[in-house]
Image (cartoon, rainbow, N blue to C red; front, side):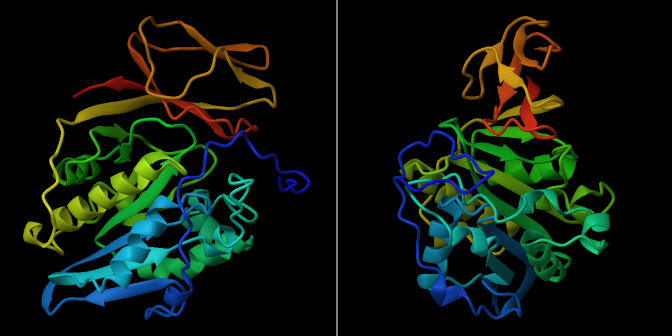
Length: 321
C-alpha cells in the first residue's frame, strides 16, 4: 500500500474497476492548450465543449473522451472541443491510494471566479484554469464529466437557472436533475462567466456518473455524452445507438451544509439520496452545533467524506418535479 504524503489522508477506497487510459496521444491537441482538441464540422453550428478529469482520480470521463478521439469522431455541425483538465493530478493516480490524486495543490473546480482567475495567487490548478479559460470563453454549451465518492445514483447538476434545467431535460439522462448554486469554497467551471448569467446565452452541465472507480460510471458517462451531443446540436441521433431515457426527477437544493469546524461528523453513515421525512431531524454535528433538516422530505445529496472547514458536507434538497 502506498503511504499517503504528509498532510493528505487516503479515505477508505472502493474497488478500482476502471483501467486509466494512456492520454499521451492527446497531449498536443490542436488548440494551443495541452490535452484540448477541437473537432470542426463542415456545417455551421454551436461551439460545444466536453471535459473530463477536472479531478485527477475521476476516471470515467477520461475513458469515454479517449475512446471518442481514438475512434475518429467528427461532429455534424459546429465545433466540438474535447478536453482533459487536471492531467497533472491524473498522472499521479495510484490504484492503491486512488483518492490522493484528486488535485495537486487545490481543487481545480473551485477556482472559476473571475476575480480569482485575474488575481495574483498561483497554483498548478490556477495556472491550468488560466490556460483553459480562453477556450471556455468561446463555448456555447458545456458538459463537465465527474464521478462521486459513494455508489449513489447518477446526478445531473444543472445549476440554479432555467436554461441549465432546460438543457438537462433535453439531454434526458441521468434520471435525477439537481438544481444547485455551487459551493462556498469556490466557483465551479459550470458556473463560470455567462453560464451563470440568466440574461446571457450559454449553458453548462456537470454530470456525476456514479462511484469514482465503478465500471458502471463509464456506461453512464458514455450515455450522457451521446445524449448531450445530440441535444447540443453537434450530432444527429442517427449517429448513435438509441438510448432509452427514464422519467426525470428534479431536486432543488434548498441549503448547502458548509463545515464550520474541524469536528464535523454525520449522525450515521449516509451514502446520498436518502430522504429524511421530518423537518428538524439531526443528521450530524459540526462541533457542538446540531445540523438538522430544514424541511420535511429532505433529500441528502452527495454527503462528503472530506469534512474540513469550509468544505461542503452535504447539500439538502427538495423534490420539485
